[in-house]
Image 1 (cartoon, helix red, strand yellow):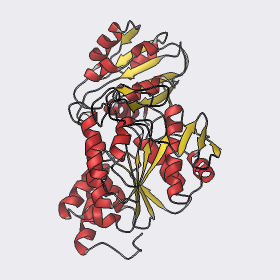
Image 2 (cartoon, one colour):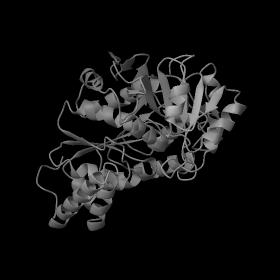
Image 3 (spheres, helix red, strand yellow):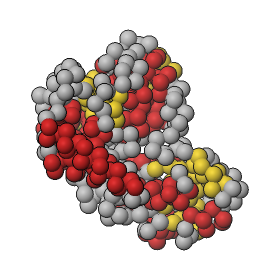
Image 4 (cartoon, rainbow, N blue to C red):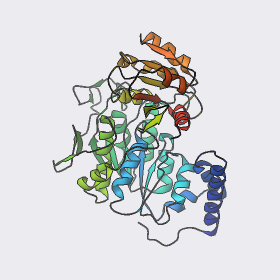
Length: 412
């Protein structure tokens, strides 16, 4: 840390004040949290504001295609055992949102920041992080994000020579390729359920061999590194071989993997695994994800899934048939306007579930489910879907803007 002397110039203080005022106006107008517009205003007045706000903080950056909001929250909970934490907890993960978050952290010691994959290198350059967590890379928003191997290359170039401790998933070849340019990497065996973006070697383009949980390229020798941390069932194994039980209120294997990576990050700052994992138990939901809400006298569990890898993980944690499932898909700017990714999702995993389809692109989803030979009904809105659903808790799976629409409808 750089001490607690005030790093802000008069111009920077003005920018912070103006940003907070813009955010307040946005909230008063009912247009969301205001973090993005507040950050944009502040950066317009002082383009170097993000770097100034980060100077007194130990910064931890978290990036991935899936799981970064949840992992950011878990790390923030764990590090709160060692000092005050500021975080972009609501997921505003581009420069404006990150700037807004740090503007509220003048008394904090740590900043735990979720970063959109495209912006990782630039945010790392501005904030001089002590630690960077890299969880996974898979296809997402094909009209906006780079192809996965290009993204891995972008990360690799940005991390070259970084002073940060990089906590990286040893089971994702794209993440390993990206992190390998960094001189200080801690490898975590966090698993990889979705493998369809990792069959060609990111180093030479050769075909990856994947015996069991291992992987290697038979042509250039690029291979899975030996992890020092690992997810093993319901435990995290630390570098000394000790097994620490994971007790989460969040469901699914993916969140246990997120907890394993979070424990490795916490250890960098001296928080022992037992303390870190106990803190993580406090997290019941993350920005509405996994919340169970009451709507029309029914229990609905809200689940966010934005891309093929995310849908695969989500299908693994829903209650078994005949639990009713509502699927909602939009294709607005924040989702990516290309819905071709629906064809990469294995919807046969929903066989036996009564399925109800809604959202802006409900007909695209209906065609995909028809081809997958699933039984479903297309609905005009959430109210109709809930009325038609048979008894029992309803699992509601939606992509990003569809999820926000649903949260507003149920008052969450």
